[in-house]
Length: 315
Image (cartoon, rainbow, N blue to C red; front, side, top):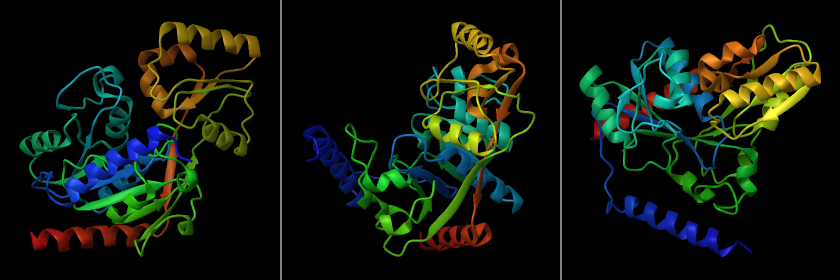
């Protein structure tokens, strides 16, 4: 039996979606096309790696775009253009990571419509990638991409589970990305394109028997990828997702290295962003990028661009 709190949460989600579906609540449109990348569950489905992948594919085609993000974890408010030399405190870890990796404008703002208006005033109309946008229905989108994980098919709604919406919400998606080995038959795709991705890591100059540490949504997945690649940790330290590292954290990591006899550290790109200047105290440290590959990427992007063109021609 689903707990009462999850049932009430589901009623709230369905009611809100119905208000948008019927036009009672109106989504505002930007001048440029909006492509949303989102998911059904809380954390760890690979939204940021997919945005990076999609951004790389768009850059290969010479398409100008920016990224609109809430800027989760930042301590500031309002709309701001992310400074690639800034801090996670000001902009959030994932927006910083995206602008550094892609070298494109990233705009943060609680209201993504206002962030988009700011972007178009500064940069002119262009494509907008809406990061973590599936539930942010206040901004109209021209193409909705939703990532799903295997666990999503059997999970529960918040707060007893990790789902932010029921599986039936996939009817709003234009394409469903099967991540982590998710099987298409486990989800109500109803003829929607199912894009398969493979997620991996890129190892370079990894210390022997390192201390592996990270503050991400699914740390065990990162650890399993390292072990598959032949990296056997001397010790492990896991923090909550988007963890803001303190001087005490750095001291404790150095003490853990000494106790375990490790020769260095291994962590993720997102953690390196959150460490900032403190990263230098943990040398030698290998910062491991996550790399995502999309099967039949050219056809997927062609489909997305065609749908966007058709929809904008009708408005």
